[in-house]
Image 1 (cartoon, rainbow, N blue to C red):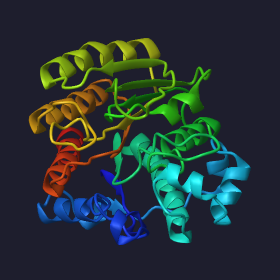
Image 2: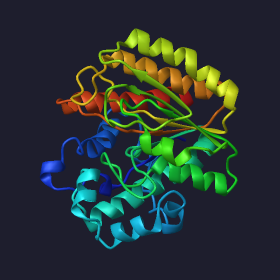
Image 3: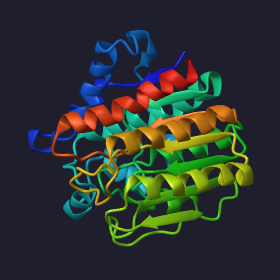
Image 4: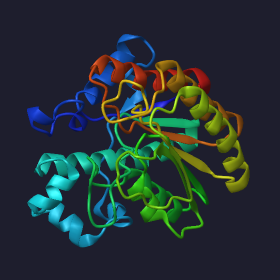
Length: 300
């Protein structure tokens, strides 16, 4: 059974002026259930990650400042969110959800977190709407517990996973792959194990051909026990922050290829939703929901 992490905290801890596009976290489960793609039994409410688990990737002083609501204004501006007790709790829950998704993926082949993919968070600071790096925390924990020996991060959000790249540098048990806009945020890019920067306006045909050529080769080279798929939908042509030109059909083919490649190679995959900033919430919602629909078609 496909298991999907969702908690009401995903969408309610921020002020009204920060709601969009946060409302997608509430609407995704509603649409998936309404369309009959999944039932309520597919969803689970994740537990909070423990402090020890988060501490595997993040500095104790930073965590203490977050928990004590002592993060200074400059650091808060860098995250993009005003600091609150609910926000910090939300981040622990999202991270716990991705850890639990790893367990479910190992059992069922795939698992998805309605949130997550917070790839801009570093060891001792957050940025870009990311406080904790759930991909890295869950990877470090799964490797520590010997659930896995090798992780491949496939980050196809339009923004480079700079925090992920930095946190995983010099680790032989995690390979980071990021395909992103060359001139997009973040201004300063870290060095992933493999980076493929794309020029503004890159269209689906070129994008997909690069992916088709790259992912099978990486799987053959790295032989991962699990793939973390950061499947942000911000490469869409309408995205306010994207600067690439992928259509909805292109995103469909992207997700289909990644998920089918995982299935064919018997590699468990955890999907985290990442970014999506189209002015039309329906575009964001449809793009994310088709990822879930494909996972259901391919893995059941």
